[in-house]
Image 1 (tube, one colour):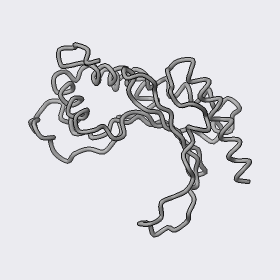
Image 2 (cartoon, helix red, strand yellow):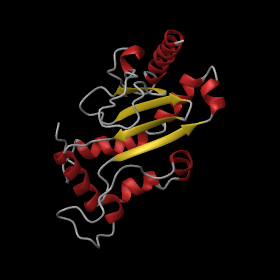
Image 3 (tube, one colour):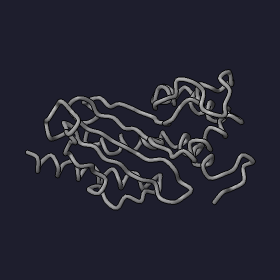
Image 4 (cartoon, one colour):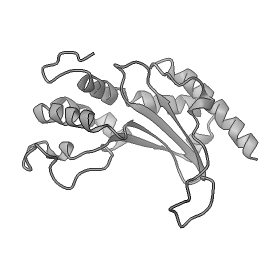
Length: 198
């Protein structure tokens, strides 16, 4: 059963990678290479079941100018995609916050578009309880400045997962992230005056 399930996921991931190449530059070598291991780290968990109950994988964008990462998960307890910036280092995080603090309008325009909100809902990610160091608590964009992660998420129905077109459906979901990715890529590769850092 494992071998069959694994083979099906590899086939899905290969097809997804092919679809992704139509609209983005991906450096992940193959669908198989995108898959995460199914083994769980149970050292600090009360649940000692050694295997995950889902498949998951990730794809990395190619090129220093293309920032952000893609993640997909397929499982009995839910299937979804996520994308964005899961763990930006302290330097990148401060750089993002400085850009937002200077002018949050471009990011808000993306996040507030009706189609974008209908598909992804709101921005996801852990947040500080108060203002980050160097920013005022009453800053007009404090709701965005408190983010430590910048993630988007979209869930799929069982019908979508079982569709023969599921790779195309997932690729379309990832493509919908591009306005957000393009904005963040520009932020992370330019200074506060808009000059390229590359």
